[in-house]
Image (cartoon, rainbow, N blue to C red; front, side):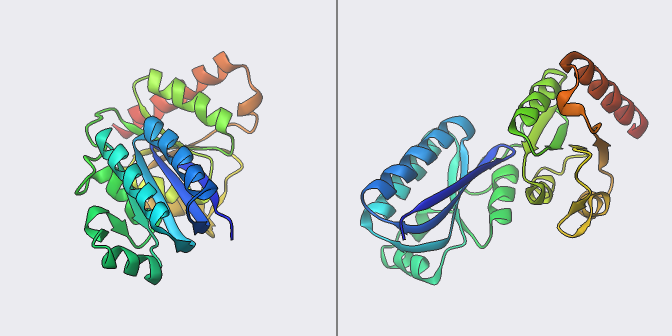
Length: 233
């Protein structure tokens, strides 16, 4: 099967799901192009390999180059979901010790945030963290800029099911979510979030937030957040 890459950011970590064969040619070129761009923008990348059927020497070499590139930039490329076949390849080549490997994506992302062997972690940013969940890249970009400009560290995701991963990794005490999100992984949103961070405060945006006047929307957003923060303190 030809390699297919499914990519998405989860906060400040970029996730790449690899499906198919990771071999010399277009497959290696495609992987290198996607991940190199992500390294430049995000620093930390998680490579999911549970759907990789086969990897050749070029494919493994490409991953090694990308790991080195990420660490040279102060980030890391972590591997998760290794199949028994790929794990055996890494062990036979004595390269497994060169990587940080995890059973699942959630563990890899948490390591990127909290720090690990090769990750410095993202705890150096003293700004209050806010997890934003909205099924629109444009709205997420708007939220991030407004909140960061107001002194927050805004971390966004467009995928509802990724929001618990982001919340667990960051331990954010404030979440901003779309009014259309009611259920997360089969449970009511508030219940799901508070099982992870019991004292998290949740701000639900108006139904028409995406189409409101930007100035008015930003003003109301910051006013509502200020009120929540004041109440919490």
